[in-house]
Amino acid sequence: MIDLKLLQKDFDGLSKKLMRKGVSAELLGDLKEKNETLKVAKVAFEELQAARNAMSKEFGVYKREGKDINELKARIEANNLKVDAALEVQREAQVILEALAMSVPNMPDDSVPDGTDENDNIEIKKVLTPKEFTFKPKEHWELAEQNNWIDFERGAKLSGSRFSVSFDMGAKLERALINFMLNFNSKRGYHEVSVPHMVNRTALEGTGQLPKFENDLYKIEGQDMFLIPTAEVPLTNLFQGEIIPYDKLPIKMTGYTSCYRKEAGAAGRDTRGMIRQHQFHKVELVCITKSETSDTIFNEMIECASDILTALELPHRLMQLCTSDLGFGAAKTTDIEVWLPGQNQYREISSISNTRDFQARRAKIRYKDGKKNVFVNTLNGSSLAVGRTLVAIMENNQNEDGSIDIPEVLKPYLDM
RNA sequence: GGAGAAGUGGGAGAGUGGUUGAAUCCGCGCCCCUGCUAAGGGUGUGUAGGAGCAAUCCUACCGAGGGUUCGAAUCCCUCCUUCUCCA
Image 1: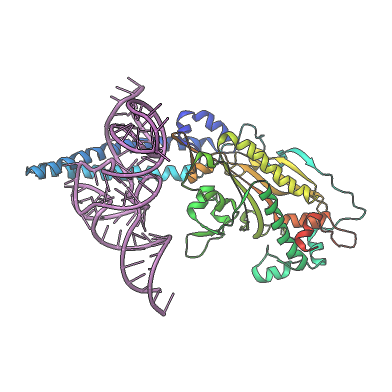
Image 2 (image 1 turned 90 degrees about the horizontal axis):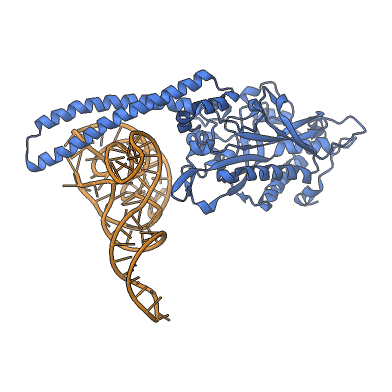
């Protein structure tokens, strides 16, 4: 959530930043106005409430002293009508402002380039050079079916489109990758955490998926519970509502979960293969830090994810996302794109974001700095998306006959 | 699934309708005293929002949300969580 105090103090500065992310001037004006309305309503209510409290106290004194209370009671009752009305006004203003504020995205960092789509993202660097093939490299679904690693038809039979079933080496590789990634992250100092795959509404509001993106989430029928779209949600919300002691920071976590997404806005895109599925495995990094160290941690996370790809000998590049490609909660994001020779292009395999205090403010995650409670910075990033890593291994390590070489670092995980 | 008990400040733990934002103890901060196997005394110690240069004041919060009442941590209802016993 954006800082409503900043809205009062520096409306122009805030507006300028948010308009870079496509927030309309109307919405900003509305937000400012509704914030004022609430403030006025609050003061009005609190004054009446103070009067009520004072008179009620007096009432107690009267009773004890045996005085006549009728006149006082009449005054209190008259005031109470006003209190009720003022409370109603205040509540209404509160609901309106909250709904508005919760749907405003985070401010992009000044360092984030302006842009209208992903073509305006900026390449930071390339790591490893794609190898030259002496034959036309196949796409991963062809290889997957040829090797009997993945069965898309049976996935569809069980669950519909965008589901698949993995067999034998396909299944084993998924498991090996998950273990490899978790171990890799652990060695970098991230604590391994195993979390629920279902969370409540509050958690999703904390990280910013709700209220705006409910259409992308699978909801549990009859309950206010959702399947997580990413482990970022449970990992970050682990500390929801908490005040973390100063010396506990930074908190660095890694966790593996399946991720569940409706992909409502992606109709027709990547329908083939396992690039975009409703359920996929992902190993996630989440860090909770002070603002002073969040940039350092951010770079560490990018390095960690990139180094995993390097260890797997997969060529990739780092992309700094432009304003329009930035997610709802992100102040800045670096994507890692892996080279897919079958598709002859780089595809996103990891997205690492610094949300600054945006999520912390929503989820009320703070730390003690001396006497003051300060909002933490939260960061998240995939390290890595397992399915897409498998895709990259298939496409990059394919031989002319369709066989696939297993990366050396994974062999110990496969009893090879 | 059924029966019961409980959820209070950093921790422990009082508090069944008014002066209780909350006794007391522990912990922690500061100050003082004392001097040798060490304790004693004083004082302070929640969060959020608002008013004020400030001192300070106002509002809300005793698991969550409603209700009763002039007034609720305290009574009633619903929900959540934990524990015990039964199935």
